[in-house]
Length: 221
Image 1: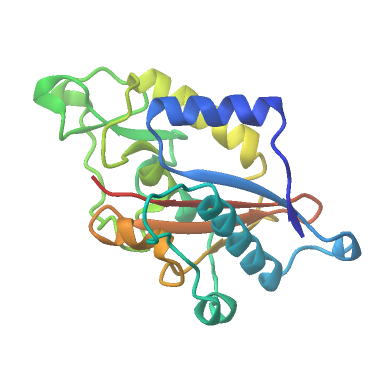
Image 2 (image 1 turned 120 degrees about the vertical axis):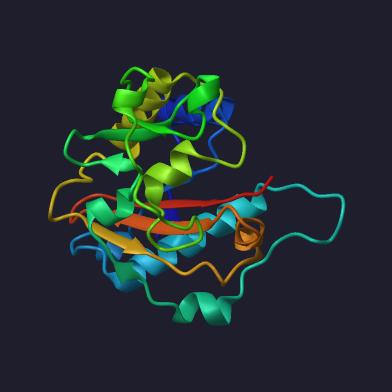
């Protein structure tokens, strides 16, 4: 099992995600040649998220010795929770219309939510189901669209970037045969920043024939 080197399209998308201010990371992991004939199992998904976080940590630079590490006793013993695509996306996804629920951008609607690119007016305000960012129910849509500092994109541009990212990294997300796991986040100091308030997230996505994609985030202000 090894991390797939990003191609030109992946590198460009990652640059666009960073430029927009997103904090979610997506890492593609190819299965070992010896296991490529069988679908990835729970152990493969666990190894994939560990590999992805290790790679993220190795890219960090610091002037101190406080480089986050991995607690391998916890990491190698952790159990992932199987989830559906709806649970993965979370309450910031409007399943009926198949679009994001996004905060308004105009001053009087900064704490109101709207479906997709609906006009920002009282009649279009959507009540967001309550959730705590640190809870299991926050979801990928929240982690993608609501980092500690607002994305520097318009609502239509956020939707386009989100759809582009899902199409690139998670193309079979809604296929019922796709495997999704949610993972604990107490096994690496990488996740400590998010534990302060915003949230720490770790998921894996896989199909029976493709790679595993590790999706994770941890940040604070």
